[in-house]
Amino acid sequence: MGILDFANPTRFMKLTQLVLPWLVGLCAIAFAVGLYMSFFVAPEDYQQGDTVRIMYIHVPAAWLAMMCYSIMAISSLGTLVWKHPLADVSAKCAAPIGAAFTFISLVTGSLWGKPMWGTYWVWDARLTSVLVLFIMYLGLMALWRTMEDPIKAGKAAAILTLVGALNLPIIKFSVDWWNTLHQPASVMRMDGPTIHPDILLPLAVMAVAFTLLFFVIHLMAMRNEILRRRVRTLRLRAASAARPAGGSATLQPAE
Amino acid sequence: MDLGPHAGFIIASYAICFGVVAGLILWVRLDKARLDSTLKDLESQGLAKTRRTPEKPDRQ
Image (tube, rainbow over all chains, first blue to last red; front, side, top):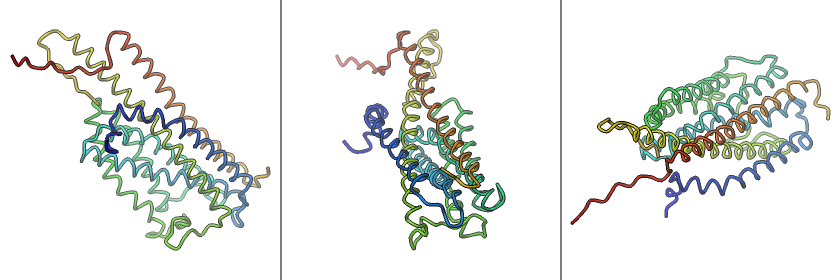
């Protein structure tokens, strides 16, 4: 049995039932350690003071905002190229989570910006491209809701997601390509992080905690979506059975 | 714990983050409870979860 066999919806439900409690436990531990380090171990920044503590949620949320869209783009390829039954489920369920993390990133960035930059918002390339990402998440969620058939909606959303993936390198390199108020990358750099380890370590632990949180919510949402499609199939089956003989059936198995 | 002159911004950031994450978890949990209830109702109406298999053609 290959690894792709685990992506069968029935096997996925069984596997995630086993994995989820462990992921929840790890996530809770990571958050407990990360929050303790953020508030009681990490020192003040010599320029930002205590405001640097906002970075322990802002930076992981911003990373996840992009990671979530990357997962949606990969899932979209799975929908369009391999027509995998779980690919559009994954993409659909990642959109609201990605929107939530992008929202956290934008709001916490604004709350950090007011005391540090003197303003909540500037229309610079980084901030604007992340706002575009947030709007794209909302657009994709709206698109999923406009179509009743999840298979058709999945294909349309997959095309739009792949087009929108062009925004990811723009977000990443916006601070290098344009003169922005947002500072350039300080962790993921070719010459290594420029942050002191006392601040980098709590940031890394919080990043792990946020990533685990994403996987917990994503897997739970995917399980719900599979159940929703079962409900839809059962309802269509009931409607088809109740239809008088000779009527056309529109039953479309979603799994 | 003294968070300095910008404590309000720090507390607001963490409060909003906590609220959004709690909202996400609540959304998933409520959705699951609603779907479980709907599935139970449908099954109680005699709609089995098992798939229908097509009848094999008679070869005789």
